[in-house]
Image 1 (tube, rainbow, N blue to C red):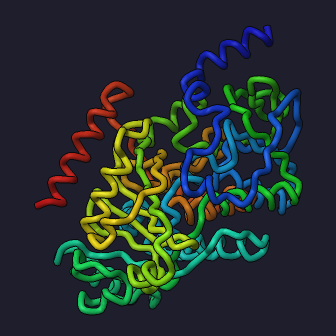
Image 2 (cartoon, rainbow, N blue to C red; image 1 turned 90 degrees about the vertical axis):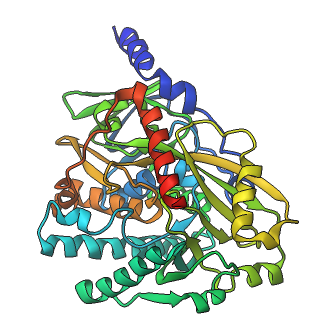
Length: 446
């Protein structure tokens, strides 16, 4: 009977397992410059813990670390390698707040609670900084971030938000940058203004994830790589998480797989849309050339719907990201296509070689607000970071740990947000996404 259940569970989740299990890191600049090669053995047999965390990215690692520091026993399951998904592939931009506008929250809560959400958006970056400092994580953390305006209307919106943040929330961490002063941040004639944030910045995301894993293991978390969770069911103790060669029995379960959960939680899958985005890394530019290109060493993101984002690495490469798509495969000639995108901003780099090109999936919600909640009283989840995952995952980890430790008020505040399912079902989602992207691209051009 047990064997039959296991085979049935593996069949139900075969899409996830076949595509994403037991894989090495994407061949990225981050993987090539990773500072930890530790490998954690797969789960074998039965394990009993207070909490089972599914997913070895930022969300799962931050949650596990917070929980074990509160005295819980924790097992973390990762289908491939720690940081294998978006956590080890993203643009590395650490940005205060959320991917959605603050008024998205005002639709479902009071002004006082919106203020609490705002404060937590600032706290999210503080948590990342605190984790890096407390655990000595070497991940090239650098502060400074600039949101640049592609058009005059973008510049007006950035100026208005700078003023609103000061008047509505008393926040003085933004500084509007006039077009004439942009040369202090970026050597390009493409932009007409910008909003600088001193509290945001950038880091090496894979080394941050690997550092979190080291800290979690040192604190007592049991880490299992190459261990795909294929089924979740209730039992007398709480829940069982069934894997290929083992089982975790836990009072609480935390689902932190984001775009890679597959069929483990179909109700969650319908609330997010996996969107692929891509990054290239140039050859090292040399210190003088890199500093001339981006004198302030700030992370930069533009204001288009189909946005582009870029920053310098510690060794002086330009990391350039963008080109969202609905494909789960790296399109052919991605490196050259993105090089041409890069040259529209930096034509002076026409002689520069591209050393790496890679992609990965982010999980976007309909309203771009993060989606936190419970599938059952003791089954928690956090997903839908919509491109703001480096900071909001750290907040999610803290809030889930608070909630499991009987202080759920802050976590439940996010549960008030209404999240719609994406229309169309599995067959129509990709065509609808492609149409939406084409529409946004047309808006950017016009």
